Length: 407
Image 1: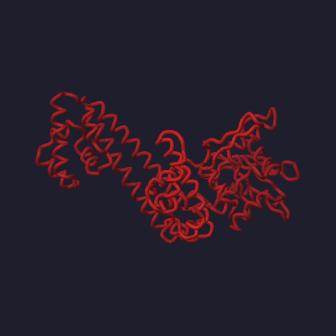
Image 2 (image 1 turned 30 degrees about the vertical axis):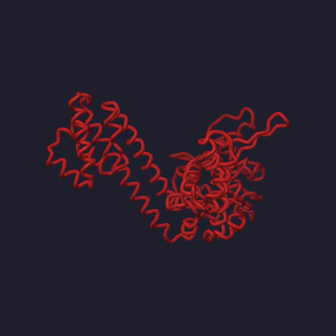
Image 3 (image 1 turned 135 degrees about the horizontal axis):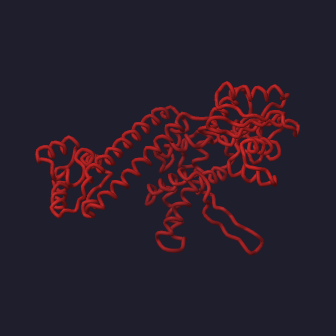
């Protein structure tokens, strides 16, 4: 924790030179301020040597207080600047895009271009350091997790499109197809839609079903349904090709997502924070991997700040006596928010601390059962985040006696 607090204090303290980068794909614009005057103002190619030259130029102008390098993109196109600045011993900060836009509005008549944006970033770093965020250290699992989530998204899109294609041909057949079953998706990828399945010989069909591990009764029922559907003439030409292509996409995306998940778990197997998180009720490998890869706990001084980052802290709106209410926030990391709320479902009905807390919140909430359930899930997710914060901060496994006693 001390490391994270010192990192925040370092970017908030005074520096000799404030170097702002408006990052881009092919080149960045660098603007450095010293004593209120501009000392560096030029484009910088997005190459290691050019980035290092710009940072070295700023460091040559600095004294004992050093250089603060601020970027408006810390990942992807800005990762090279962050990595090189940290390697050269500079403090590194991140100015979120919405904060940069608000800062630019404070200067009337200022045009929107790369050069101006770099100046705004540097000037905000000097004048309003409280608007900056520390740039967390990159983790290998962040990239793996990001790619796994991309594969899951592709698989979901392909499944939804496959449902639409099947539904257009025969709603009864579409309702009977559970696309979460690997053997069924493999069958569709091999034979196509109803026409391909009905036109396949019985011998080949049975052999394929055995190879895919399909239950014989379910496989026979699917074939019979396809034959009846084809007899009614419900399926357009070209359906088989679309079904094969989409089902193959689902299989590829699922296989890659499983491989990436296994690779992440292999890397994290020796991570102490990951192992400790798995002891928290309701937290499984997927949620623990997301927390470890997306959350740098050293950047959060309290669990309230972590809750705000995860989108679980209510947004208060108060203005005199006319407005006074709290609402669910729209900001925060939506992936973490959804994971933390969804995993609470495994605690419903249990006799542990969080299961009992869910029951109490559900009983005292008003509205329909669906609304009461939604409120209770969010309340438990927020309460459990206190435990998650303590576990990640202290690197100690979940201790039921400690939290049961605090209930």
